[in-house]
Length: 171
Image 1 (cartoon, rainbow, N blue to C red):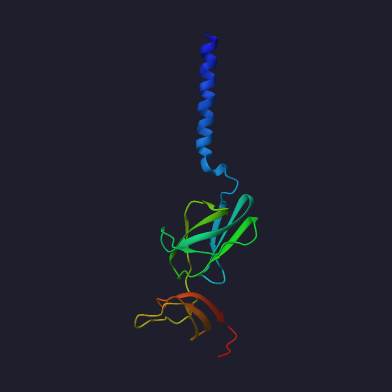
Image 2: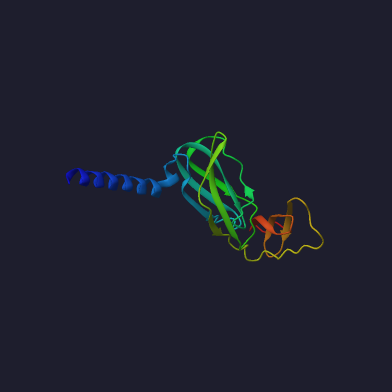
C-alpha cells in the first residue's frame, strides 16, 4: 500500500511539473519579449511607442500595421539591451495599430503576442487633405497653412502619417 501511494505521489508531482511547464511554456526563454506596452505619443497622435523588456541583453524590432497581419517593421536595434523601445511611424490618425515585439538571437527570432492600440486624432484646425489622381509611390513632405501652420508627411494614399504644428504664426 505504501509503495502504491508513493507511485501516485510521484505521478502527481510529475503531472504538476508538466502543468507548470505547460503554463510557463515559451515564457521561460530569457530572450522572449515581456511586459510589452504600447502608447500613442502625446505630441504626435499617429506615432506609437512600444516598450518591452527581456531577461537577457538582446536586440529587437517591432512588427506592426493597421491589421493583425502587420506588414511593417521598425529597424533592428543596434545595441543589445534589456530595456527596449521603438517608435512606430507611418500609421494614420484614428486607426487601430497592431504590433508585436521581436527579439533576435543569431538567426532565430522570438516574438511576443500581437497587441493593439488605437492612434489619436489629428490636431484641431488642421485642414483636411484630399488626393486626386493615383497618388505617389513614396511619402511626401508638405507645408500646410490653415488656422495653424504645419509640416506634414503624407503616405502614398495622401493620408497624414506625421506632423508638426507650429503655433508661432510664422506664415
